[in-house]
Length: 65
View (cartoon, rainbow, N blue to C red):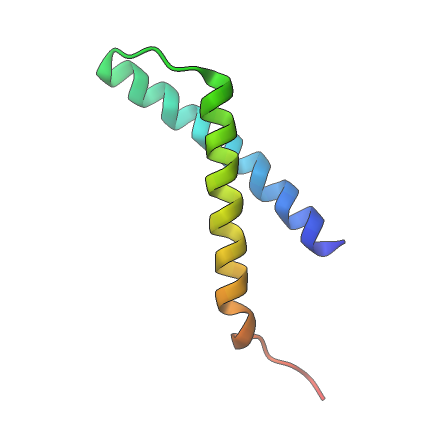
């Protein structure tokens, strides 16, 4: 359950930050962006990064005996 919740939170924040970044870049370069494509791409990259970070640091967790 913890994995599902952490992925949902990561997807939510990736969507928000991806949309903001896409809007800013679109305004700076005078480009038209597709919000759906930008959102999906941000969620995929955000989930990939979050899960890679969790996988890399998993061996560093302290286990109690």
